[in-house]
Amino acid sequence: MDYGLFGDRQKYTRRAEEQLKCRAQRSGESTQSYIQSVLGLCQEVNPLMKEDEKVSHLMKGVAEDIYQALLTREINDTASFIKWCNYIEDMKQKRVGRPRFERLQNQKLLKTILYD
Image: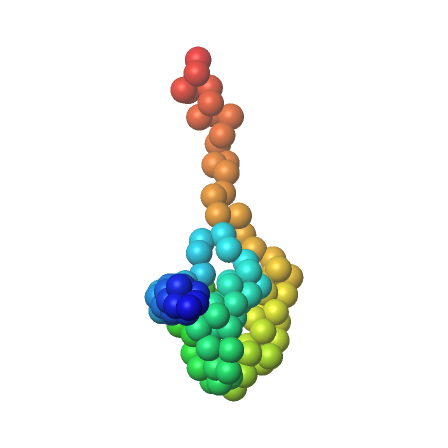
């Protein structure tokens, strides 16, 4: 008479399915953390889920810049998805970027005008 356990399992699986449907990489969340979360949900929903289905779930919620970079790649399984995400992240870290906000050249003059 373990009907409760079966019912709980169904609820648990349904909840995981709902989360998987709308799971997107959050602002500030690392790509690796996102991948682990999605693959964990895939495992909860269907331990025998096919690779192409997992890749589909990963692609639909990954950060936009990563998504755009991955579109040109041949990705058939989670291993290649992870490989390319790692490569893109590495390249992003090695890139010399401009600061988002450049300081005003006349900062001293502005400070004098505002505070004197």
